[in-house]
Image 1 (tube, helix red, strand yellow):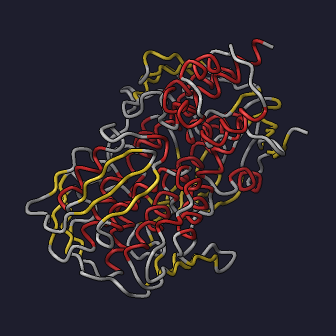
Image 2 (tube, helix red, strand yellow):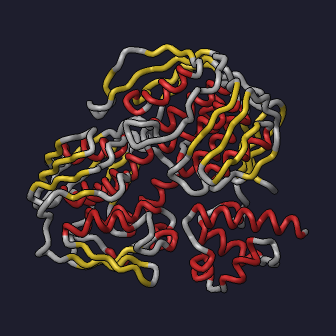
Image 3 (cartoon, rainbow, N blue to C red):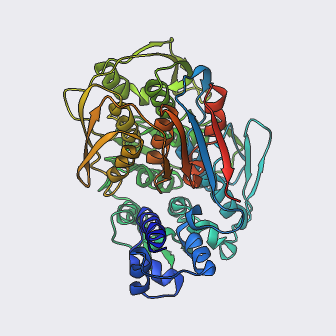
Length: 507
């Protein structure tokens, strides 16, 4: 029993850290003491069903959910995949565009939106504000019609706290209200790394925010306008998006330096142009935005395909030594990844380029070939675009596991993500954690089935699922809600390629 409590405690600790909460902050959300949280995480505390349910709600984790119980995946392998699959549209672009729709008083129609849990939470928030949203068809086209005035008092706080994206409401709303309040997710305090860059990006527009009692209390000084270029202290995607949305409703010209030029930022820029906002420098780290006093137009926009999903599918093909065709790959955002894979011996064919539905993003079809991989000579590490994408690094952990030799991965951005790569060891890999940011992967690996609880981080969770495809025998991945937050029907789509994955719940 003590071991069982310890396992629950470890899961709660990991989910808490992934949400960016301290023990003290979680204790405040639950109305208990920090010492009690400490005992729970060490497995020294008896837990009632009510407390488990409350912890599940606070951490947005099905690991400790009640009712029908969490969803698990049962994988029989090893698998050889075959056939063709289309890459779905970008989840991160979809989330940014939902926030950006608040800039527009007219109707926004978004095409082929990723129908994932993160999007669902944001739609719940928008609906609570009085925004009319509806799915138009089975293609996941989404219509968004804002009211004349948003009802911020009625905001769905529970849904808002379950998505970190609510911070991207600050940029669109600061021009509409002199003061407003927003719930914040994860108990973040201003001054912490994740929040302060947003504040420094938005202060030039007169925004000041105080965080107390679980809310952002925003006040806007209309006398303050950007008088010189805004230099972002962190080249973050959501920070850049917030600055862009603030600049869109500022009638002057705003220059944003050290801007992210990642895929979701480019999609936002293309959408803003549809709204009549002038955006120069798309794809570079300097953006020049000439905004409008008011935006009231009916627009139709199709976000581009997701390079991270494309990388997930590539990794699945590589690790299972399969020949599949991955269609609609946004090649501009995978060129470094493919160059690295080529160095490791990966063989593939690539079609001519064609345009995405947004008319801007370059797409190709990739056909993978079974390849014998070798470890790269240099370490693999992410960089801001046009470097290797930060969210794509985890897939190189499972790819390196099937390559001959030692591969060093340096995940310098996140404090605790690299530790989840060692979960591959339960399937037979040799992954050595050198420090919180670096792992050494020794290959080749002959994966064997095992039962693993899903880590609370999206990409490492999918990495384990990919390894299970290549594992001999039966594997079980437990509590897979985190995968549904970022991927639409991933298991079902892999089954269409020949995988044998069953979804089930404990009785």
